Amino acid sequence: MAELDTSGGGKHKGGKVRSKKASTRVDLTAMVDLAFLLITFFMLTTTLSKPKAMDLVMPDKDEKTKDQLPVAASRSMTLLLGANNKVEWFIGEPGKSQPTTDNYGRNGLRKTLIEKGREIQQSTGKYMVVLIKPSDKSNYKNVVDVIDEMNITGVQSYAIVDIMPAELELLKRDGNY
Amino acid sequence: MPRVKVQRKSTSIDMTAMCDVAFLLLTFFILTAKPKTEDPVPVDIPASTTVQPIPDDNMLMLTVGQGKVFFSVDGNDIRKQTLIQMGDKYGVKFTPTQQEKFSGLPIFGVPLKQLGGYLDLDAEGRKAFQQTGIPHDTTANNELSDWIREARRVDVSLHNRALRISIKGDNKEEYPTIKKLIGVLQKQKINKFALITTIKSDPKK
Image (tube, rainbow over the protein chains, first blue to last red):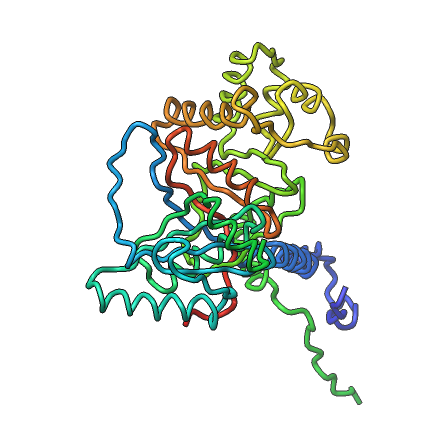
């Protein structure tokens, strides 16, 4: 293909006609072409960022055992996940403290979690317990976002629990349901 | 007078080394490539900062999208045995051809009654088939729960290991669907599972 004839003039000076030795070299150009084509194909089709697995441990939902530890209201924070990517949070029991509406992300929930976590650590000397209560209007992304915030802010103890009617009322009142 | 001949050089380059390298790379990419399983419904998975990779095998994945649940488990032998046990449980007979086909099926979401018909379809027909998801709504009609239980049993009996369970959900999926799914898992005392996420570009700060 890309090879020039370099054999020179074809004069046979000697009397004897020699049988021409066939070259053992194979032209690999086409093979390399093919190989690179396939490499390109496989490189483009492999997914570079593999999905990750986020471990989640749910509280044991056994109806028989009732050995649940009471947690002081002063160090429990409740997150209510509402509609339209809004979250409401309050410290302590529902109804006794006014919930604050917040959004997800660095300046919203994360800031709150870090601040409140520190406050509770200082005032009670124990870590904060976060209860995540997704309402029916929240979506899966919200739940994952909140768990992710827990991992980022290093909240040691959190749980996903069912929302209570009183808390739903709070969400409804604030227009987040 | 003889003319001075210029020695013409060969233009061919030795391709052997290049060929070697090319095939080495090719082998590497082929071996690392994993066939991508096409999801029956578009699933846009949420992002998180988790950096833990999914294990390559021994996984049971529940894919959730548009309110439907799809079931996939790794390992051809596990799939086949699970199908046989499910057939026994529900009194549905599967032919050996169907069992073979099922063991090569990466993901599915049809009720058990329709599964035989679904398996008889060819690849084109399966793509066009509207999968309704595995029933999991009520306690009486909870095939999903049985699928999970049988798959776990098979994994223990065949490989003596515990199946890892993960949920792959769509961003826009409403929480009640996920809640129901978690409820199904918790009924079987599965309190630890994984949520599949992509990596977030936003740096951890």
